[in-house]
Length: 341
Image 1 (tube, rainbow, N blue to C red):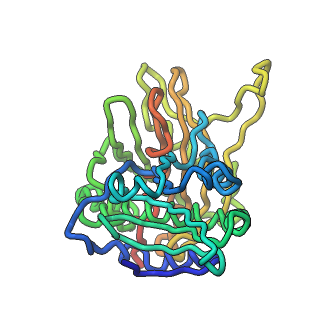
Image 2: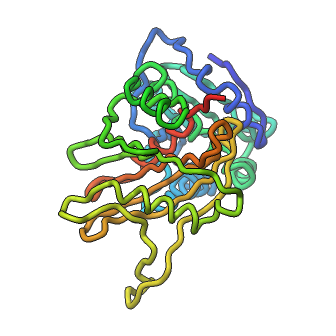
């Protein structure tokens, strides 16, 4: 079953973005895809897996997630030989096949959706030689990563479209003038003037977001320092476990050998999401007067209709479990925000 064939080049990501959620049609009798988020099943024979192609794939997919306080790979890898794939794991959610054959004229990526289950993405890297496949990964590896990330993000968006907290969505609309499909599972923790805090609680972890707004004073006030000042002001409304404790932003960290503390500033970059310009900040949070912390990612934009700065700030607390999947699902929330013009 083939639905989309993408030639070698960076256009793979552009094309996948264009089809987005609409590509996840069920064409397989309704079987649900298996596997955990950010888990990739690599179908690759042992010879190729031990060659430079396998080395590049492992290095690419196992890159560390940025700005979390413990090292975790971007994707968890599972590898099976092609002879074992059909009988064992054809319904996995993310599949990457490696096909090296002299019958292939040039390196390319074929992308199929919902082949054996839904929602599923099956990417096939095909090349006439190990050398050609390796060159492809060197040149277009980032696009392959982005394509897998888009597939995971689209699943969050599709889920929220059908399973969302309508009360929280209505609160976001009344507070900030934004439509937001908050996925089911999040509960309201607190609200106040220009402020909403919600979280999704697990037995050994917590993921949450707080949204806030304040008057826009011009581009000169959209610096890292200005945004951090606003973040800490509103984060104080999130209490810690002990009396007088509250959330704040980590401003210094130990140096490499642990002999002293050095200044620490969150990453700051401008991104465009669904046609809107946002400022993305990634950093670490902690609790003043207590011992808690974890990673955060925030998205800030200007609501032209209200002339206010709007921020969606997302955080993870997971001292015993990995943080990648919690943080990634929070990053998808900004794609669920739409402004009322």
